[in-house]
Image (cartoon, rainbow, N blue to C red; front, top):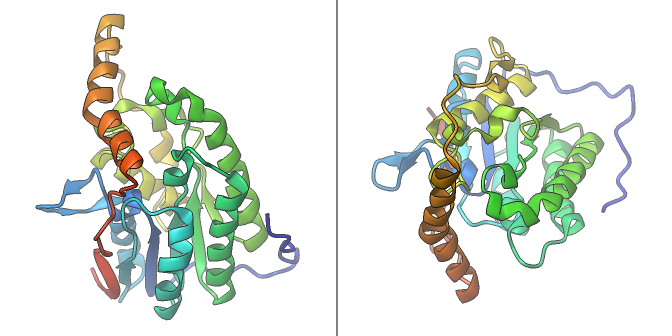
Length: 269
């Protein structure tokens, strides 16, 4: 991990509002996969956050540089320079889940890439926010071997964020974040409701006027699935999503191959 010193205790944090230029960096979650489709268009939590920001930030302009399949290193090498060129005064940086799912995963390496992005954006004066990740084994039991990786990455994200004054939306802990209704059928991307909850969580962490912790409250209860029903759902998920995902990994292909950011320039909502 980088050995950057934490900011001085008397450092004055950036004034929270108003913000005029919001730039989102990341992978498929920030692009909005799971909230809309490639025919009708993707919305996603970053778009939703921009919508929450707009009433309190007249003239807000928003760019989204995220592309599905990107690793943390890609965010650093491909998205950071364009983001800096846009001179954001607010940026969100969410990446690392694609790294975590790869056979070779190094939490320190991933965190170093994220920290480099944090450092460059905050040094330019941007207010930066990120999130922690939920335990994916609570969403897809077959993903149980990845649980220690999630913990390791979250710990390092928190450490890097503290060193650079980055706001962290702690979306790892509330039980609601693993409610199946917040996830799309592939269990890798949030559903529209999940994207709305992520946007609300980041807004609350940033102190957006009118935001609160209601994003972490549980949904109304529903009857739990039977054991047979749960087992059948796991088999359907493995056949429909896990198998094709593994096949892409074996072929060395990414879901983002040939794709470009959906909103590369700052413009009004």
